[in-house]
Image 1 (tube, rainbow, N blue to C red):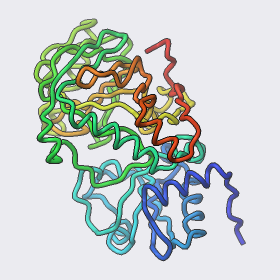
Image 2 (cartoon, rainbow, N blue to C red):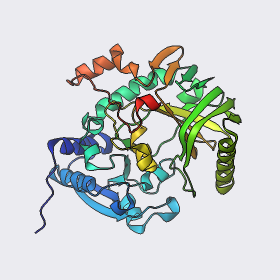
Image 3 (cartoon, rainbow, N blue to C red):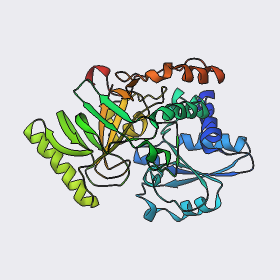
Image 4 (spheres, rainbow, N blue to C red):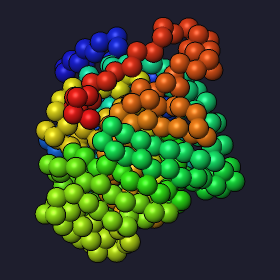
Length: 368
């Protein structure tokens, strides 16, 4: 008889936070875990086992369905479709959940997308701090973001871009429409760039948003590229001539492949999970890194190439400073909002120790 793998108390705590806080499953319900084949190099097979075992111990009947790298609605395997229809809850421990986040997914099951890619992440502070606590902090921040008529983003490399947002549209819920809950808490609602004007320093790479698949979806940038933005559109690029040509060709190619306007800058947001960390070099697996690091406050990204979130090409900024309505919320990558009295009150009410902010995301601060 096969033995159940032993998991640490932190890993089980992360699983319980996922089950209770994000999924919202209760005893007597069913949970289907859509687990991506670990041979694909993004997810491990220990998290599904830990979550399933923990759920079963809580009286929640769980099952694991292994899938490959599915592209979207048209490629959902029959077993997954059945789970979406017949299960109370479905956990996407796979990239399939990312491609469906903005889709009208069939079935009445509650749907959760996991970015706890491996068992170490599940047992880290990004997941073990109760999900409800980080959701309370996100909600408190969004009360400021949703009523901010103006914003400004700067960074050490020369970014200086600002804009306004239609707070009435935000109030009507037009700014974002996720159909999948995300775990752990990652980034808040993105802020519109429809009026964004200024310059953005693009460093390190252009990376895919994970929304729609397309070939050759990463472009490493050995030098700085400056993007001139006017009213939410890229109007010019500057830098070394050869690299600028590569960037232009990349955008043009993706736009043609996906039949969309590539030059739109749709929105931005930054990570708000202080416990998020990534202890490998980002370049060793950029796709994997992006699914974890975007929750860290040091990382801010813009959604470009498409008139929707999350767009198809992301710009990565590190250690940015962010002002909303002239008030400071991030200072050189430090999510200073965590020091606000309202956040401190949440932490105290929940009986937690002060939240420790990790700066280790595979990008040395000296290179940002």
